[in-house]
Amino acid sequence: MDNIKKYLGIDWGEKRIGLATADSEVSLALPLKTVASVSEVLTALNEEEIDIIVLGVPKKMSGEAADNPLWLSFLAQLKERSGRTVVLADERLTSQAADSLEGSAAEKAERDEIAATLILQDYLDQN
Image 1 (cartoon, rainbow, N blue to C red):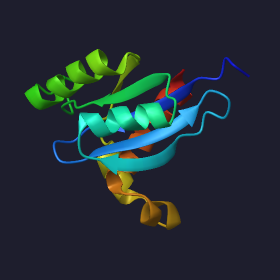
Image 2 (cartoon, helix red, strand yellow; image 1 turned 120 degrees about the vertical axis):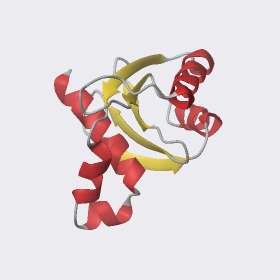
Image 3 (cartoon, rainbow, N blue to C red; image 1 turned 180 degrees about the horizontal axis):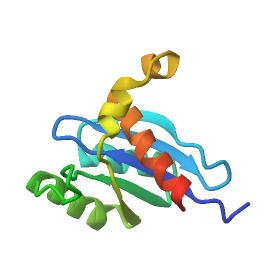
């Protein structure tokens, strides 16, 4: 059981950062919470005992990476301060997909948490 990995999915935004968690045993991403800073993300990493971070990369619909200096700064801080592996994942359309969900899951979790869940689940499904 010691080889189970815990993941944190992150949907970064300038105002809000959605978080989701999963582990390698179940491979089902679940919304965690919405935070506002890299410090709050680091706190969640420690509280949840996360091994691997899956960070959504903002991309244009063409697939080209969006050149966002605030996101790049967040990425650099996350890598430097977390001490964990950071995996980058395409986040195109996750916020729109989160908005399209209906029912209790969408009502209980914030849009950013749902987007983080979608980013993380897509990563888990592909790996």
